Image (cartoon, rainbow, N blue to C red; front, side):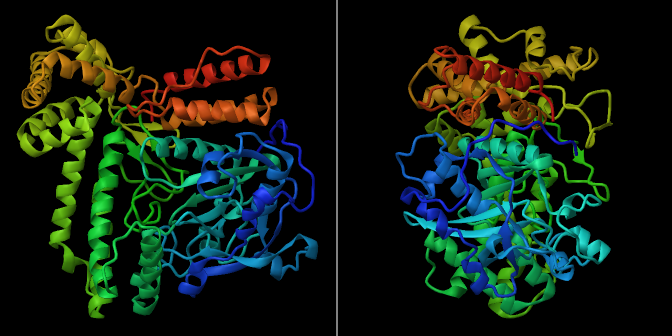
Length: 620
């Protein structure tokens, strides 16, 4: 990996931070309730300070939510805060390789407590029961409570643990930074860390459950430590390892820990007894995973959900952004090539989520009855039917939301006119799932079969046309509006069957508008006006995609030499806010303020990265 040019750095002074307003960072010291609650759930590592780091990104808003900085702290960096962040998170584990080879480490560099790398099931490990797998290049920094909420904090890129695939496959311990292995080297990549920080915060602002990035620390040669947080960072795979091993006592301890955290944070209703908690667990998972996977499918989110529950949080939140992306079109044939296996596709994520729900039914039964029955025992369980119903209902709700219907309108249509929704959804899916005549082909990191129609464009433009022209959109204009850059001349040909589908699309759309206007005693024009206004925001032209976030991140890192840390932070925050596509009172960032040289430079960078988003708006 080629070394990068040195960015403009936040000046810091070595030594212990002394500002009282940052004292709460000291509470993040490796200690975590999971270590005591689940004794076999982690490998503990001593850590040392890692020199040579600088601060590349800091999430002030998140730090305030966690109580790490005061509510009135300005969104500006200072020497003491920067050094505090580096002293807290700029660490590297002392791993098995270091101990075997007696790596010299100064006592002054040592942190007093141990930090855990948690064990969880991973399907790519030869063992496939969770005995050798887990956090391969991450540790948990600890936890912190504030205003009734407890947060988990973990860091990626802190050194090679014994739980990485490389150790399990090659049966040896690796030196942190060993260039012969990638993931197994224990380091993380700066571009990956910054991309995850941007994408996760955009998802969060748009109401998608996800872990968030608190800070990104930069190290020489393009490496980084990426600090991630969430109110509960436990994954289904943390529990699945005990199930696979038939370890009921270990499973109970992990489940109890999860329930206690959820109850303490107010995310889980008190059931009155442990047995009632165990019975409620699969119902909770069924609901959350139906909601999550429906959102993924509706928003074209590829998260590589699989049966082992490794790449997802217990509440259905997104984690580990290395393979996460948002598509511009419904590229539902895309698969990521991970060398020894192919990923799931977007529609396959529902099936994987359903299997995770089935596994939790098995877990619940194991805990309640003391016997581990085969997973096939639960194939026809009523909670799987509930999952299917909730998934379909959520898909319908998201479709009405994307069209632009207000919440009260959506609830009315969902309750009274499922037939109208079903008919519109059928013709909507005809265009959404249409694929290019080019057929399947390879892309840089996998293979795909291009989608050809941009549903956001037609949902944005159709109400405007119906309102202004007071007539249906002609087939030629409809095709011109909906066809993407992936559509060939043959794909855009208006044969008789396609014309009928275009007519049906507008007929079914209009039926939803009419019924809503009738029920709420208003006019179709007023409903169309509201749909047009809301849809313009919800279906914004320049929406982020996986490809564009990579280009935006590269551009941000290149441009840092022209901007201060604070100015670049302002650009990042404006960009994240610009990608917030929710029809609420929040305004978009000011793109015209040119009062200083720094502001003009920031605006120039902002325009460049928005241009990159537009260029990639239909891509993977």
